[in-house]
Amino acid sequence: MRLQLCALTATAAITMAFVAGASTMSPALPDVDALLQHIDDLYRSKSSVARIEIDVTTARSTRNMRLRAWTRGEEEVLVLIEAPPREAGTATLRVDNNLWNYLPKIARTIRVPPAAMLGSWMGTDFTNDDLVKESSLRKDFVARIDRRSDAPPGWWLTLDVKPGVVGRWARIEMLVSDERLPVEERHYDRKGRLARSMQFDDVKMLGGRRLPAHIALVPADSVGQRTEMRYLEVQFDIALSDDTFSLSRLEQIRQ
Image (cartoon, rainbow, N blue to C red; front, side, top):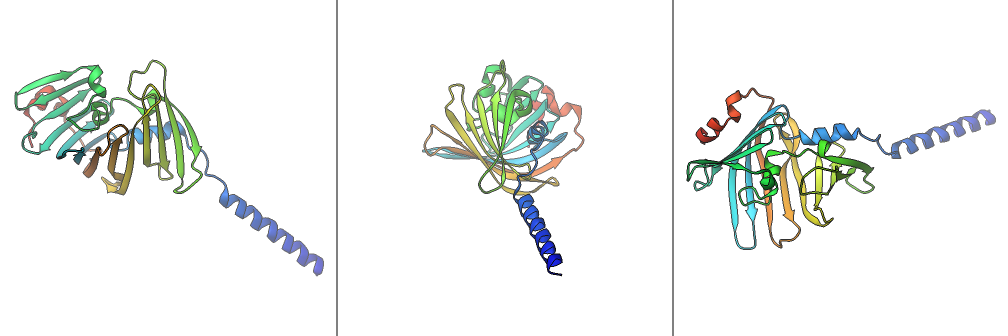
């Protein structure tokens, strides 16, 4: 009896040790390409329509804008400013590698050259590329991934730009939660300097999926300056007509 009891005790101890060890093991390494594709498509899916609010804060002033945005796939994006009144009707269209701005005050459509993709979009800290998402994390960067060692749990991705890719960022460091949602990004320029950081929070249900509704962008070299974007409403995978992403539509669209 004593031998049986000792054997049972030893077996139980081994089982408990195995369970405890398994509970502390890191989750399996995620498929990096699939994770980056998921993040690339997080706010657009096959198609999307969104209402967005942007607040721009500088040392001297603050601005608020309300936008509506349509996307289809990876190559078509239309963004319309609905407010304030002095900027209402201003719109940006991207089709494939082409980008245009429509300026209602002068009733003109202006093509944006490729070099300006990295310039400020409408005076915010976001670039044209941020708004129309021409660049792709999966296609333009080589990724390394490591488990985050402190709380909250998640994964650190280090993304180095591929040779020959034209862009502003040489490296992006990104923290992704176990829900596969971005938490933080740090963008480094071609000289290896930290250029800006982005925080993602206020996770909520939008369009049937959990998303960070609030994004705060802080440039590294401008004290007191930041741009905040908040998704107010999103619909995914809805039918959009072909003329949604046309130059004629760009010039006719209104609030």
